[in-house]
Image 1 (cartoon, rainbow, N blue to C red):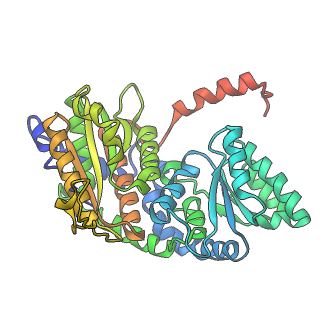
Image 2 (tube, rainbow, N blue to C red; image 1 turned 45 degrees about the vertical axis):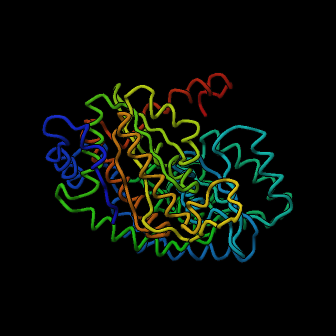
Length: 425
């Protein structure tokens, strides 16, 4: 289970501190499905549901792809790719022997990026997993059209055998195409928004193709959600949600998520979508930002240490490292590092993290630590469940609907008008 350490934030609390009573009411509102957006709270039951329905088919499809292809091209944007990419980069930053490479397209409109992917793909055998509730979102729809053409050029009348669709169960342009062409289909659940969908086929199929044990992920997620149903201030999701809301009301308007594992980068991107899209509404909300430590201590570190004091910091830590590596001894000691010779690099990293925490607190930045045991399937699942539940509780505490995103449509209307899209399309 995730552990939350608020000792680095406690000195910044005012009055009675975090409002755990309000966190409890928010949790009850979520459980009762009596709050705003209640139709989109199926993510809590999703791990158990997916295990009983689609998980076997997802694993079978992944095995089929892994047996015949050197690459999987995932077409999707926002919640249709960030969770899967975060999981793969966290758990499988380098493909193992026999693991296909996974490429993500459809999350932008850059021709340079697209052509870079095509060059890396080369003449490899590949499959496509297109992920879209509707099938008409411009960015993924354009990329899917391009990769369908490439599949036809490569495989001819067998091209449709290399397409897997993850879409609405009953309706939409992509569902209609899939039914017509006979593409295997997986479901984007009606009661789960995109940013909460990583534990559905949306995230699980690409993860399984990359070699991640998705059965372990789902079993761990089931156990984590059960543990997080604790109705008490001891619940780490209450602690995190209540602390960040309290700090927000003391003027800490930006939350910086950091981690000392470079492979966490796209998990932070997933977190930014989860919290930014859920809470940034009605003129309020905590702005989610991220950094990669220790690298960003030599760039953003100055700003965090001595810039505007409207920041709070949340650090994700893994209690155990996967690997060990001792710093070597050098007789000449030209770099003056023999004082750490023989120490494990993980130990030095922990000391650096403690030093940064102490410095940032002294500089006026409250520090929250979120810890899981290890960078593995169980650790990933625990973080997903924890951040999702805490996000919903935090959103309800701020009295917004955590499950809609009306502001996302503004740029689309302008873009379609400028591109000359027919009004009937």
